[in-house]
Length: 123
Image 1: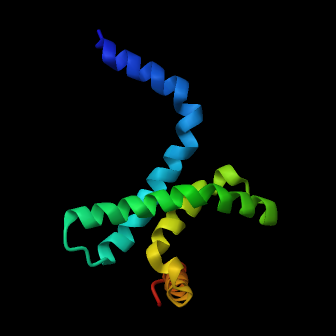
Image 2: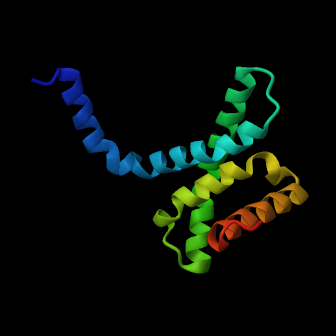
């Protein structure tokens, strides 16, 4: 027989998953995207790394809904289908959005990597 805590947790997840599902997608995609800037950052302590990760995930969580809405309004992509890629990219850009030149450089590097994947590895 299952323990009572497990049963209660399963019931709570079943009831709340329609409400928390999109937010969970955003958070997990942002965590995945934030690993690249975290790996490249010069953080002296774990605490600095944790604060960078939290800042990137929270920024992504705050901006993803708005960007997904704009993509739906301008290009017709369903907002609920682009949440994960948008959250990933916002977190992946990291702090580059503060410097437009760095943002363009990072976007260009990403386009080259994607092109390399589809064309057989040439960068």
